[in-house]
Image 1 (cartoon, rainbow, N blue to C red):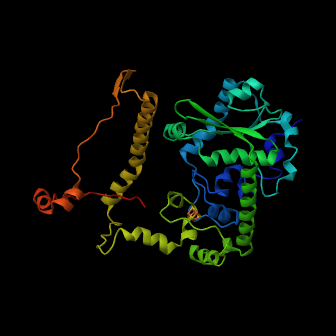
Image 2 (image 1 turned 45 degrees about the horizontal axis):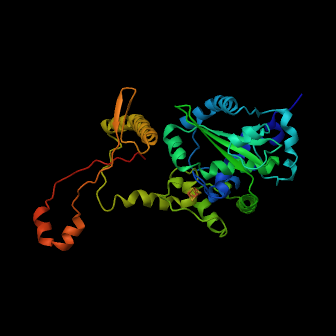
Image 3 (image 1 turned 60 degrees about the horizontal axis):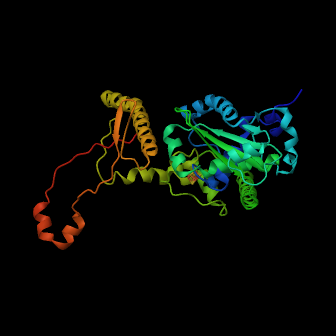
Amino acid sequence: MTQPIQQILLPGTEADDRADFIGGSDAHHVLGLEPWGCPRALVLEKGQVPPDVPRQTTKDMDRGKLLEPVMRQLFMRDTGLHVAQDGPVMEAMAQWAQAPGYLRVHLDGLISPPTPAQWAALGGTGPAPDGPGVYEGKVPRSAGFWPMKRDGPKLGYLAQVLHGQIITGTRWGVTQASEADGLNHLRWLVQWDDGFAADYLAAASRLWAQAMSVRALHVGDLPTAKERHAALESLPDLPPRLPAHDSRCRRCPHRITCQDEAYMAALDLQAIGTETMLRMDDSPEWQQAVARIREFEPVLEEAKMQVEAGKDTIKFLMGTGTLAQGAGARVTYRSHDQKRVDGKLLEAKFPDVFKQVTKKVPQRPLLITLL
Ligand code: SF4
């Protein structure tokens, strides 16, 4: 009986042993690539530092897991290539044992060797490879899909395919991004690149050694984030911290240990300054109002994202066109110059006139941050 690839590639390793190896989904961290890569976060995770904030499974992750098999079927249907997830492609693993032990992979699949026509259709140049390639599938929502159609793939996604190539000994692969709610697909061929692979292996080896120093110090056994932070500070060679306001830090499970609790608190307090803080913790009406906002704000965000994604798609489809109609919608998309008064210039050149035409309008915006 043939073994599934994931058993061959992850001997004795379950998914929750992620601290024991650098896997394909860590590839974006190794070189600090978009969308969320941070080498320091990788060192903390592999150094067995416990997360300050529990990792949460998002709806996007759930949706991706459910849709990935369907998208893989569509890849096979559209390209005529077979994506295997079991034994017949094992011979391609010739170099697996040569990859450093801390690098492992759980592949989405291996693509059968392409014919010259299939290779050309994928955008390949030169002779078609005679061995299989790595397949990785992503299922972003429209809001993530259309910017990639415009700007190209996230480099972290391509690095994941390269990671699979290093371990399996394959020399090509495809990243497919499938729009979760529109069934459109983007496919990028990722060909082996000696220079990129060398940089990747050097960075992975350096980060793994740093993670082992964090483990040797038993940073993960220290009871408070403050103590863990201080212990990490004694290791000067760790990858540098990103600024705490970076969007990657805002969603990083290690953000308190890494950035220090006091610093994170200071970030929140900056906006408060010297004003008096009214404490509302005991007010049931306040609690109800916050609960209502907490519940419905994500719905509003989702709705806004869907509308913006729709607009992005329309802009993309219209290209340089200025008027379009279809499916009961008429759209104009015209450039025009808008006349605006340059306040700064007016104030600099005609300060008296500026004074006369400027009046103060009282405002009191309500800004809510859900902590
Ligand atoms: S808090 Fe920021 S800098 Fe620190 S590990 Fe996380 S993402 Fe990296």
